[in-house]
Image (cartoon, rainbow, N blue to C red; front, side, top):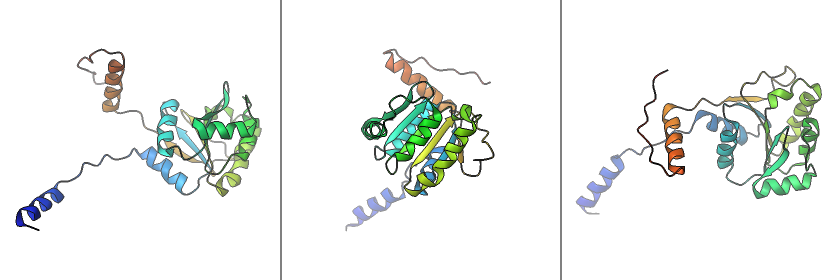
Length: 196
């Protein structure tokens, strides 16, 4: 290697890479999945955005489904749609029926349960969630309960990992606004957001 190439290599090595830190709630989700955590509750201000981001993390390698009290259980993506069809729970908006039925999902499946905190007044829901613990842990399946603020029933509080998703930063809000203007084919104005 010539002296010039060696110097250029050393200079290139000396340039620090810009590392963008992954948000703490995403890292916590990854860690929980790695160690086969069967039940997770995420305090989130935007469940739809949370599901979209966590689906990116799952990278299409797991069956992903979502449930809510109006729509019922829905497969998200090809693996999720196949898994949902195999369960035979076409339109179950009953949370207990859904929780009992998802015991038959394939390994590594993930089910997002929207507004789960609203279902905990029913002891049958609490018991059905608890019944998933060992079955899901055995083959890395995960129930992800989503809501704005969880106060878990004492019967399951020791079995659920709770993750807090922070509110978006000012920079994240700015980028959302700029994206919205771009989507509307308008130029984004200079954004001036007053301090609260």
